[in-house]
Amino acid sequence: MAKIKGSIKIDKERCKGCEVCVQACPQSVIALSVNVNGKGYHYAETVNDECIGCANCAIVCPDGVISVYKVKLNN
Image (cartoon, rainbow, N blue to C red):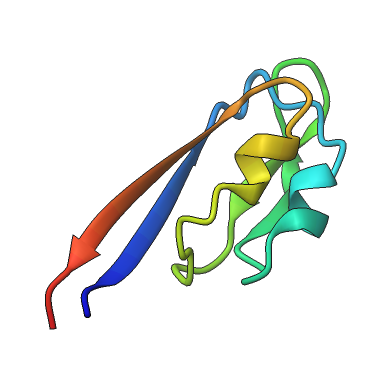
């Protein structure tokens, strides 16, 4: 069976740093940055490449700033 590899893209300038996505991620892929965006918020960023493409982060994001991409890997 093929495995799914996921990746996410976060629009850091629109992110308000609410941390809802951080809590929703089962792989601990997302954390708040120590840096701030143009609005002064600590934005969400990826901290590892363990994304499984579950899209929990995008579903719970109140501002819709996360896009999820999935790639099927053949073993």
